[in-house]
Length: 187
Image 1: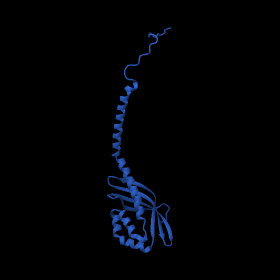
Image 2: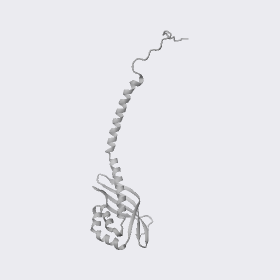
Image 3: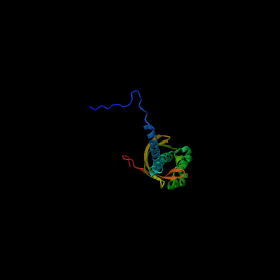
Image 4: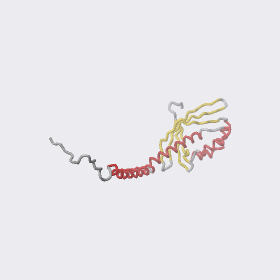
């Protein structure tokens, strides 16, 4: 049987370790690793900010927001102030759609005033089907409920629309407007 004997004289304490402790030696290494990780993550963040996916998402959100408002504007008219409603039509549109509104403004105003009807619109659902931030174009599908308030009562018509949107200096504007047939609807 081998027994190891402690050859230190009795009553003497164990000497403290010489040099810095283990924690003190690892601290500079941890700081360097943290600095390198921070730089790498910062670089990745900057790349992500400039990526196409961020631009597409931003364009999609803006086009959707502006399409919702434009469809409300284009389906809302008050027969007592048709000019204000037609101003909104023109402000919400671009291209040939805007040209049509400007060219027929007087006829539209007369028609709305003579009929004595007012309409208001509520977008019930909407989705962007295509967006090209570089070209500044988007296609949006919208469901809209239009309430037609006449002297003899109100009626709600549900419409499905596909609108073409174009980005201008003043935001996204309607440059194409196509009614879609609702499945199960008559006609």
